[in-house]
Amino acid sequence: MRQGKDVIVQGRLARDQWEGFPDILLKVAGKSKFGDWSYEIQDTKLSRNTKVTTIIQLCFYSDLLESIQEAVPKQFHVVMPGDGDLKPFQIDEYFLSEFKAYYHFVKNRFSEAMESSPMDTYPNEVEHCSICNWWSDCDKRRRLDDHPCLVAGIRKSQIEELKSKISLRWNHLR
Ligand code: SF4
Image (cartoon, rainbow, N blue to C red; front, side, top):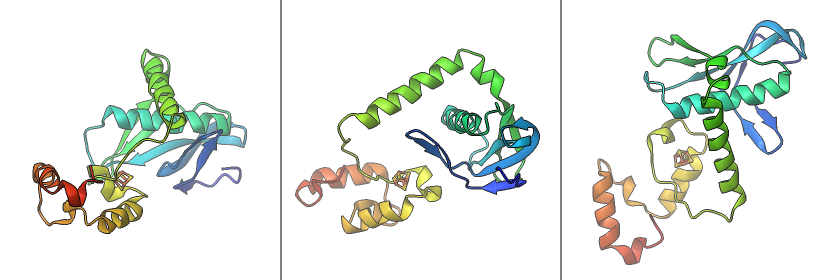
């Protein structure tokens, strides 16, 4: 960012205990602590319907970005699947509205959860797994456990049924 690169892919944004890896940091006009340029976030998604979780994620990245470049980004973009069209979102619409309180509420709850005693979790397969950075770790764990989700074509309800029937073998799974 200091060097004014036009595009930064998977750049790490970090402040205090927080960090994020937006898909793209795009150089735009506008002053920042780096010079006569600043950056905005672009993130690729698999769905054309932008979910509130995506908005929170990109607000969070933009929040981190603001503290690093010392300039408020004007907008962030979701890169649409298929044609790669950009869907713009104006930061002010979120950070100058009631949404800001909701954003901080979610962020604080996340922070409290992370600070409390370790959570009992299991890497059950979800839609996001296919693009998740932790996929190989989670996949390794499922294979080690011989998890029923590895059976081709198995449905979630069937997994639940199997787990309840064979609880002795899979009693550590959820
Ligand atoms: S790969 Fe693991 S960490 Fe990533 S979404 Fe799937 S279960 Fe969660």
